[in-house]
Image (cartoon, rainbow, N blue to C red; front, side):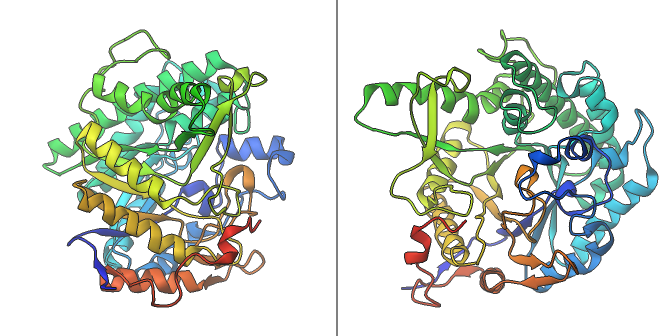
Length: 444
């Protein structure tokens, strides 16, 4: 088989988030874990995380040496604005240096402004639903663009807004631990307004300085399929969760207003035209069936798609779902796509080599079908604090010793480095990269 070439200028690298790697943070997640230690599998917290706050220069140099040409990271809002209206210039200087180090290492920075965590002062005021949240977020975004914007083109306003709302306000697994459909709707509306306000701030400040800016959210697309394709009920019940989770936020952005059933068509200033590309986070597909016992889940039951190999999280590994996600988004919205996250939890690095080949192959399939895909960012560079999963799930290309914090590249890191170096996918016969028997069981 002939190796498959990636497009010229294609972005290849990893994605990270401040709370998961930096350490030394005080935000709503820090307080949540302190108050609810039982909510974290295996215990632990992100007080130190992997100490990326102090080791970022060596860490980013490590990725650059692996031939990555892009790196996505998040700015920690709580660090930049520890009190309302008071910006920490040292923190802004720190993140400006992170961008500089990325550039020196040959990596295009992709900067996320909100990745699941809030300053404690905003969380106490109502979080996403707080009346002042959009204006506060816009002010923070403007400060970041002033400090970093001459070196940054790619911006992500909010990471996975639907996930943040559902896990924090409907399922109660994340802060603030609510289980309320009404509070979930308020959070979603607030996140829509926050994105619009930040997008306006990014474009306004960038234009004032004559800088280019690409703006999006990082949209989590989880493909839903009927558990029994021949069941009319299963086919029917999959439609509403698919719309709410996979389309409502994006379609509201395009429409410029809060669409039903979350809102009543209220126009949001700055929302229309707020996306110049689509950031896509994709991990798995799910089989959906009718369940009368689950009113809080819209009477649906979600499980791994039968017959697919499973990751350490129990998620189905389905490269075809990534291709379909890209092509569907491209066809509907007509915007360039940047895969801002795609990865696999894999304790022993048995699945990751095939996962990388198959999912990058799926990206190339989407490109060949006409989608404009600008890059692929693997989640994640280093094993880190995976929210409610603590340190029990290992998505990283690079292992981190929890005692010494030593960085230890896995075999898949070398494979990804070679793909980045060559700009192509090796044929399947190189290195035994196909899915084997080990991939067909849950390795957790």
